[in-house]
Image (cartoon, rainbow, N blue to C red; front, side, top):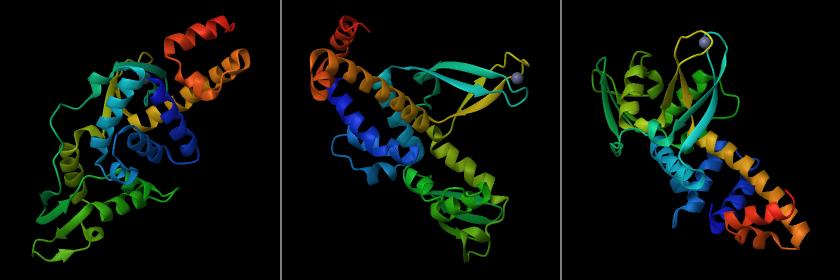
Length: 245
Ligand SMILES: [Zn+2]
């Protein structure tokens, strides 16, 4: 990681410590994207945001990912290793703007959810309440078979899978599922991989590590934090070795 990036990312990490991971992720993207502001990043469809996060992860820590998953059938804990390129959705650009979904005589104009929609869900909401709130925010207009405008909450439950399917197609990177073979029971299962929380946890571990390195080098050589962060990774590793680490 370049020195400039290290100090910017440390600053975002510190500011985000008590914030939800989703908010930290958009703050990070805004900090590393020239001219971008957080609100703009929070308004991107989730799949578009996640594509940027995958690119950033690759730049910061390389393309290899490793995560733990639990088999839903037998409870076996598995380590899954894969590459960013394995889970990037096909290069197809996400659809811009509203989508029109026609189902059961209803006609629904809807947009893909963004980080700002997730952050609007109050902590501790049950899944049904969260779904209703997302529907209310993301449905732009809903009409029944008579062409009359209706409240999104009045849509029949049968309409929801059609909406979910249309959104998944329009914004494919928003949901990443990895298929894992279970070593315990032999039955393969699918696990959801969320790059936003994965990358922010990774940055949390990285920040603690780098602050320990700053501590050791500051004690040994009397350098300031910014002097230590300005070292290239190669030279930092060299001095850490000299300092007896
Ligand atoms: Zn299993």
